[in-house]
Image (cartoon, rainbow, N blue to C red; front, side):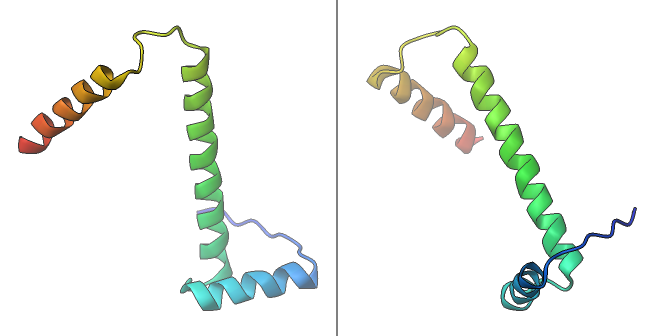
Length: 79
């Protein structure tokens, strides 16, 4: 694992320390890693949504479409 040092103003350092204490993180590094992972997930989801918005419409999303989706999910849940 690589090491990265960051400088924070006292107010942000205090905030990080509070989050570590209140949210059960072992270290400030664990907290920062979690924030970075969440940001990666957010960016990934954003890219997926943008790709979907740019794609052609395959079928109307009406009641029948969602009923079909629910049926497929139920079938997969049954195994």
